[in-house]
Amino acid sequence: MGMIFEVAGRDVWDPSLDTSKLFCTQIASVAALVGRDSGVQGPDNDFVYVDAGTFEAFLDAVIEYLEGSGTLELDAMLSGITAVALALEHRITGRWRVLPSGLADVFGLARSLVR
Image 1 (spheres, one colour):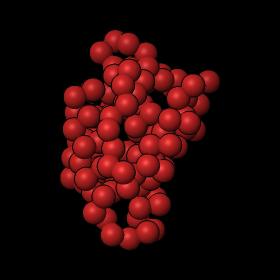
Image 2: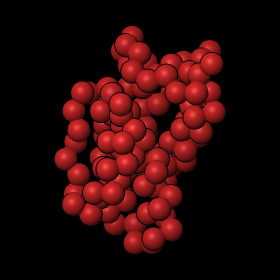
Image 3: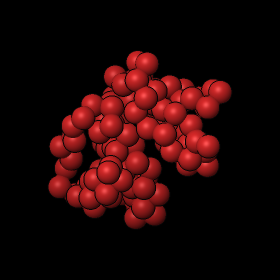
């Protein structure tokens, strides 16, 4: 059994329990790194609540940070969670955001996560 990610009363993602917990933990760490609220609340009774507007602004900050982080190790660590977050954003909005060309690999990974 997994968790349900919900946006404004709409179920948008239902990953496994371990995936959900790791995602929430990583998103909280990235939020602290970039100094922005992620809009991700939970887990709470098998639900994770996402505020779409806050999450979108958070992703703007993450992408800006990723573009200028300057270290390969940090880029590698951020790329994975950013790809998962972009896939979640796509599930929320139904659209793919335009990314800088330097993040093509992150975009490719994100697209591979949406079936």
